[in-house]
Length: 257
Length: 256
Ligand SMILES: Nc1ncnc2c1ncn2[C@@H]1O[C@H](COP(=O)(O)OP(=O)(O)OP(=O)(O)O)[C@@H](O)[C@H]1O
Ligand SMILES: [Mg+2]
Image (cartoon, rainbow over all chains, first blue to last red; front, side):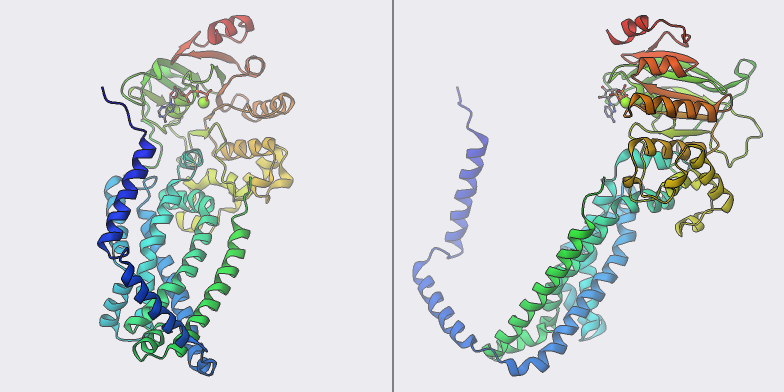
């Protein structure tokens, strides 16, 4: 006679065991190393200050480039993700077409953004052009998925009502699916732009333009005060864009009944 | 090739189909291949006639309407539509109004009405939101006839329930249909408004457009339909019973 174990408690215990095991394997519970780590961090943070305000003239154009890479990459990615999401919607197309479209989107999503950066640096050379293309593909992987899911979530009755007028797929998309999901599309697009500021920063690590290039350089040359200045600048820009974007998103996604 | 268009089979005209607009022959339907939601429904609809289907929740009314609209294919049986041989391809044969109307909330009232003419407007023009001037005029006229002439450019989410119902009716009428199928017609409105809207529909469709609606309002059905039928457990009982049916009988048969 086995007494049934509560499922919730079982899951908690399994997760706890797995966590402790991986902490030990990865050396996180090694106390002597922790001491060393804290000492190094203390030295590092002492060397971070004071930030070098005088290098702002160099960093401002660089972060402006990062913002542009993010913007252009997001827009390009958005334009590419619309048709892919259209083709990936079960409401509109048969299993074969949706599977191919979704497979492509899934494959794109598997590739880390930095790898796209490297690939496009090889393809089109160093500079922001590679960054824009990298961010664009990265964007497609996410937006297309979010979009086809939004398209499929449109109320079935609305779809049927419009279908019953004898329209075709494009018209069904234009008159039912697009207006019903418009707010979601725009708010996800803004969110992606916000998010892509970070992705664009990383693009510079591999020479695909923007402030990331300076970040890596300062780390390699141990110029921690320069590094601090760059980090403060990125922080301010990300906060500002998050704030503006949040305000806009809050406005457009206000519920309407 | 175009799988999203409702499928309607070609009619076969014979002597006993004169004056018919629709004939459903022994419709069976199951959503799960096990229990049947419709169990052999036969239905004839004549031109210009109005019929109301009563029945309690879950009896299969919506399923029947969707099959008649060509939106789902019955597991067994078939639906035939009969319309004049010279009917222009530009007029849709069947217009469908779903239970919750299926209006697009983010578009204006007249845009929702104009959706009724998508099938007869060039695709490229519609992509830019452009429609023929005659269709615009017809939409505006229908909306004025239905008493929402001043709401033309209002977004759907600005409108009251009764006004939305009128938009859905206009979207159906602009298709120049031979038959309007309406699921749970006016059931979300107060009695006075529902009577008013039904009277209006009756005036606009009289003797020209067949009208089949489901409802759970026995009084309303008796008042406005030429025929009342009751659906129970997937079967139509009292097929084509006349409107002189005594309410008590209907209640006893359909709702016990
Ligand atoms: N898409 C579906 N998939 C599976 N089962 C369904 C589906 N739609 C309806 N059913 C089932 O079929 C039966 C009949 O449903 P239907 O919607 O036709 O009833 P109804 O008479 O319109 O009810 P109501 O008055 O509540 O609208 C119900 O038991 C319902 O659960
Ligand atoms: Mg129903």
